[in-house]
Amino acid sequence: MDEPSMPTPPAHSPGPPAPPIPLAELLASKDLGLRRIAGPADADLFWVHTSEMADPYPYLLGGELLLSAGVLLTDPDHYVGRLVEAGAAALGFGVRPVYEAVPEALIEACDRYGLPLLEVPPETPFTTIARAVWRLMAEARHRELRRVTRAQQALATAAARPDPVPAVLHQLATQLSGRAVLLTARGEEVHAAGRRPPPEAAAALTRLARVVARERPGSPASATDTHGGTHLAAYALGGGEGLVLALATRQRESGDHTVAGIAVVLLSLLAAPHQGADAADRSAALVRLLLGATPAEVAPLLGPDGPWTVIHARRSDGTTPDALTAGALGASLGSALVDAGREDDDGTVRVLLPATAREAPPQGDDGEEPREPREPPRARTVPPHPGWTLGVSTPTPLPALAAADTRAARALAHAEATRTPLTVDAPVAGLAALIQPGQAAAHARTLLAPLTPPLADTLRCWLSLHGSWDRTAVALSVHRNTVRQRIGRCAELLDVDLNDMDVRTELWFALRQE
Image (cartoon, rainbow, N blue to C red; front, side):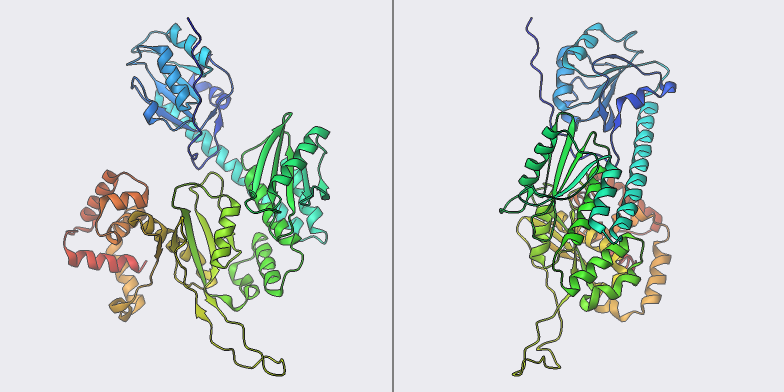
């Protein structure tokens, strides 16, 4: 009999908001009684899924620990082949009541395809295993956040030293336990810190740096590679000088990309050669925020360009933009204040845009600037951008940016649900503006008190989309039946008829006061 061809697992879908956990960590939980009986010992678990289907392939995202008692197992070889093709990380097989022992044919198939197979004892419910995986993921996420926070504080402190660039590189090399190098576009070393990698890996790192050096249009913002067990990464710095941050580490840990991203921002600011006064002030504001200053304390450094508009953007084709693509969007909007997000998030880019623009004042005959500008500051208009879906907040003072961020996210969800390229979160106006704000807010709080925040958010979204179940489900990333259940619960708690337009109008007004 010919050996089966090995299916190629698909690329993983965007992972959950927690790092994957090694299979070994789950096996180390003695109270579960799990035992690996086939396949390799190394695997990363992204999810847990239970299925008794004969072919669960269509319902797997990749990276799952699939749990099954083999109710419909008839062809172990085909079954395991399909799991590997779907990208499953491991299979947990429950002993009894269907099988007294794990079938030998299943063990052989898992060994043949290289899929870890775990024996689940009868006394261990599948839900207990799922809880253990989520607990381990939560612990891993907590460790990652603590590590990133410590690294951010250390890098920001280094950026405040008299020799900031070498200090940041040294701190980055320490945090990643590797080599950090600042290179020119031609591969010349400007500063370096940390233990040197082997010569071959160092040469490969220099070649990788040339890939991202912004000497030609279309160069990627970052690139990674592996050479002889050494992990390599290169990031293009902002500032237009073609500088590249290159990293060489013996291992990659969860959070490394985030730590490197913080260093890229700081080094881009520090290495920018000829900043104007406004840019220097904004750089100082960013560093002070990283060091723990409040928005009110850094507001004077940001100058008279406020209030500020927050923009949330996602690619219309669903792809996740890299830092270069996100930066290009920011440049077209007229701002260098761009957050491309994390590599494992939903692909949202956030842009902070000064809400007013001032035309340069005319010069007098003697070269002196007249006392009055040609025209007063005017509100910026954010146009649609082909290939992007945008959600835009209304202009907001600096201390209220968090609320503007929420409104921009809400506007983006509305734009995606209605399939429009741009939605602006418009302020309450018209008749609503005639009512005293304090009284309106007090009434809204009393009226909406029975609703939990998720129910209030669902009701707000549903009303904004004219009661469309499908569009609300898209905007909230939930099933339409979940929307129906939540809206029904809202009607129940509020004791109202949501088919009544007067009721809808009053609730919409109340929800807009929050």
